[in-house]
Length: 585
Image 1 (cartoon, rainbow, N blue to C red):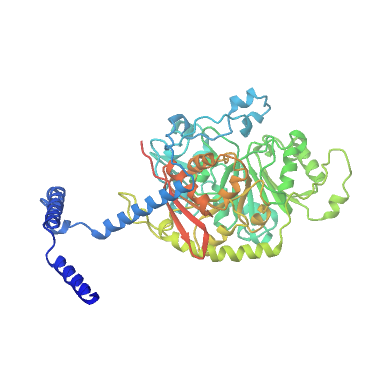
Image 2 (image 1 turned 135 degrees about the horizontal axis):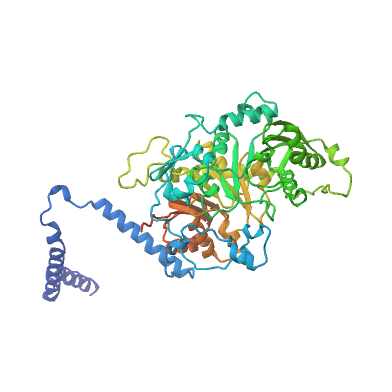
């Protein structure tokens, strides 16, 4: 019975496979017809008139479908993490094209600031205002690639008009030439019209050197240039491998800081009016002021005390001012009326006047601790400050250096074809000349010990880095400056003191996780990043998985092109690479 039943089952199964039911055949036929009709209707028109060279690229179509699938997956994953998509931010109006937050003279006056302090930075009295994306001016153009961009910039990219240029004096006209839509600066390899080389050599000789090429041998590695004009002196010092940071007061038009950054030179807004500069004590080997507009003997020498705080022992203060020039009188008579108060005060804070040539003075801060110990207590002599930086463990520093060498070498090689190349090539552009450098101004928003800066140097990239140390994190800025890098302390709950569109790339490792603990609005941070980032600029964020997912959602609101990259051997970390589009009017 079992055998016959089994055989019967096999026979019946075989018959059903050989002669399927009529209904099944009809269903299959209908499906085939529907498919043929659909494909025919969608493709017949597109295929008409096409030759064999216009056959669709199936590989590209596959890549597009794959990328869309990845995007859909990320959207689903974001929803599972509680991240909801909101509307894109609107573009700001024309009145905010060059807006710098925290500098509002009218609001500062109403708040009671005066005696010059109304021109200083006061974020506490600034209104939040419209939360929107600062767009570029109508005539804005992508800056020329470095090093050509050092000597030629687009006039439409900075806040200086032809009338302002013509009324700015003969010195400015010697420093730069305005032609149609460009501003050209005299190259250090060309004619020495502005006398920068001669001036630099003069300062070196006053220090006791044979030439300015010996600055580093004399211990000068980092320079703070106060009121840097249009960056000619800083550009020359950078060519001598000296890290020179320009710092100047906020200006509505003709900004020194904006021009310097547009040329690819390190600069930021800041002045001596009411607050200490955001640098730790003993930060610079030289502080330079050439016609920087500061009356140094005002406020009981407070400005000189700030310079003394910033200078390392043995460092130099170089002052060039037309007020010290004997106009129509003898040099000795002029020194009695102008220079003597400065000399008396500098002597009281243990400075020595090394040399004076015409209107240039060079002081040196002593490295002899006995001078400080022998000063009289009280009176006008300021007290000795206590150390204002955190202690750093040598093992932590060495471990961090090795970690970043390895990590950056791995993922930086992934980013190099995108960022340090001719990609993306803009329509109408010719192929760039070597080194194909798309970026010059880089900001590391959570610099720690300056690992990104080291990686760029090791890769021989012609970029400089503004190393930012969050103000409530471990104060590692003194180490960064000692390594010869540019750096600053900053509170990321506030805007950064710079003009819009001044950085080519923003990098941050762990900043989003840190920022979350500060109880500040992350969307405000992204709006600020968009403000200071140039069109077609890059953002590289490395952080924990969930922080990166939220950042990707915000990048969409900011209208950045973004993609998430998984890192090898680190399942908890992700890399978010974004590019800001160029929104033309």
